[in-house]
Image (cartoon, rainbow, N blue to C red; front, side, top):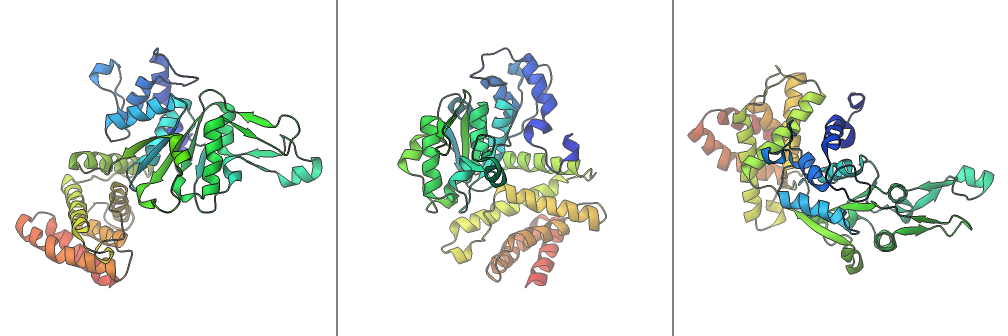
Amino acid sequence: MSDDMLRAPAEMKYAEELDYLESIDDAPKPFSWRLSPRMIRVFILGSERSDGIEREIPQKWFGDRSFVERSIVTLASDRGLLLIGDPGTGKSWLAELLAAAICRNSTLVVQGTAGTTEDHIKYSWNVSMVIAKGQSRESMIPSPIMTAMERGVIGRFEELTRSTSDVQDALISILSEKYVSIPELDDDNIVFAQPGFSIIATANSRDRGVNDLSSALKRRFNFVRIPVVTNKKSEAEIVRFRTEELLRRHRIELDLPPTLLDILLQSFADLRSAAASATSDDEKLESALSTAEQIGVLEDAILHSHFFGDRVLRAQTLASSLVGSLARRSPEDLAILNKYWHGVVEPRSKKDGGEWPEFLEGGREAISTLS
C-alpha cells in the first residue's frame, strides 16, 4: 500500500518491522503503547547484538542515544515533549518515528504558522450541518490534537514557536487539564484525554524571538535539544541513508561514489567554518548548511543525472546542484560561493586532484550562469 503514496508515514513504511517487534515484545508498556520503551529505542536506533533480536533492525535516526531515551521517558510521563534545534537536525523525523512506534499513528499533526488558530488545536464546525441540524458532536470537526486526546495517542505540533501567543495559551490548558470544553454544547460538552495521550512539539532554535514560549508553557514540556551533526561519519550515514531511500522510491539504479560524498561533506564543512568566522550576515550564506540541505543537494544531482545525464553521478553535476541550491540571494550568496570556489576549491583541486578539478569546473560554470 505504501508504494501507492508519494510519501508513506513511518507506521506504514515500516509496518512489517513494527509488527515483528510487537510480536516479540514482552516487556512492560506504558498506557496503551504498542511497543515497550526498549523496543521503541531499537526501532529508532537499530538493533545491537546485546538486544537479543534474531533479525537486524536498521537504524532510522542518527543521533545520540540519550536524546531518544529521554524523549521516550518524557512521553511515558504526563508531560509534553519539545524537540528543539536548528533546521535540518531531524526533529520532525524523530517525532514521526516516536509516534509511529508508540501508537502506530504519526499523522495527527498541526503545522504551526502565523495563521494557526485555536480551532486548529481544538475544534471547528461543519457549517452546513450546523445550519441544517444545529451544533452537536456530529457537526463538530475535531482537530488532530483533540482526536489524539480521544484516542489516547500521540498528537504532533510542528514549529510551535511560529504560532501566536493565543494558540500557545490554548495548548497550556490542554497539557495541564487534559480536557477540552465545548461551551457551545449543553450535553456531552467535554472531551477528556485518554491514557496514552501526549504531544510532541518541534521548534527551530533560529525562530527565537518570533513567538517565544511563555514560562507556563515551558513548564508543561520537557525540552530535548537536538544538536547539529558535526561528526563526519554520522553525517555521511544520514546522507547515505536518506539518499538510498530516494533511489528506492524512484526505482533508480545509480551508484553514489564515496569520493563524491566526501567532496559534498567537505564542502559543507568548509562553508560552515566560513560562516562561523564571518563578521556580518552579508558574509554568511542564507542557507543553514544543515544535513537536510546536503541531502537536498545530493538528491537534486542524482535526479538530474538520471533524467538529463548519462545516469552516472559526476562531480560537475554535484557542483552545479550545490551552487544552485545554496545561491538564494543575489549577489550576496553568489559572491560568497565565488570566494569559496577560488579560495578553497581551486587550491584543493590542484593539491588533491581526483574529482576535485571537475567539481571546480562545474561550480565555476554554475556561478557564471547565475551571475
